[in-house]
Amino acid sequence: MRVTDKIIQERAIKGMEQTAQKLSKTHHRIATTKNISRPSDDPIGSSQIMANYKDLAKVQQTLRNCENADNLLSYTDTILERVSDMLIDARQKASVMASDTVGSEERKTVANEVAIMIDQMLQLANSQFSRRYIFSGQKILDTPYIKTGDNIEYVGDEGEIGQRVELGQDTMVVNFPGSRVFGYGTETDGIFKVLKEFKDALDSNNTKEINSAIGNIDDELDKISIVRGEIGVKISRIQSSIEGLNSLELSLKKDISQVEDVDMAEEAAQFMSDQEAYQAALHATATILKLPKLSDYI
Image (cartoon, rainbow, N blue to C red):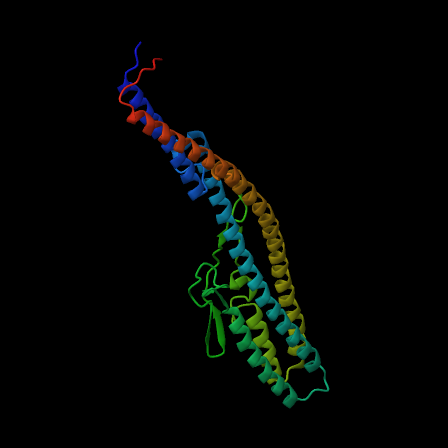
């Protein structure tokens, strides 16, 4: 078959265009540092990357949950440490005031100190973290304890707040309603009732009731200790989960990078090769297009 000048020219132009497209793709990969810019570049690789990105999003969300849960629980434990310290102080006062050698005036002075302690305890019970009350159950925007005269009452609920801190596992409860920590109030049970009874015993100079306050305070200290123990277990579990999630996150990012990211050294070498090929194609095409006729046959 005789090859005409026109056919050779068309083939030369087509070859030059293909070389230019290849050079353009190489340049684009270098500019974006990505092997795949659209699914059509590599359908199988794109599918794999999408699946990995989906898994990565789950891991990163769970890591954020872990951070939030860890911060909340750590802050809660800090508050309960202060509560425990105040109860220990109250117990020490009760031990001293229970002595028969202590007079009524001394007891009234300590009663005033306990009254201040009750107000300080109320502030701790109404603590906030990120503008949310931590001891109000699910009513996180409402003050959990209100004071009317000498009466303190719990107005939160018993609701639990969960955070998913492990992939594929149930949520972890990360809050402790105030009713479990501080009790329901001065008229019912808990820390405020115990401290108010201690204060009243001091005001009335009642040695028997002061002695009773020692045991009651010990009971409240035990409750706080149990809650803090639970917090410690939860924080330990979260830290263990964070280690595993960090490892999984790195693995997924590595898998994504191996498919998606370019080898810059390899691409730079390819770009130089493509550029040389393009320059050669330009020269060859220009030469062919200038020929008045062609005598070669294929």
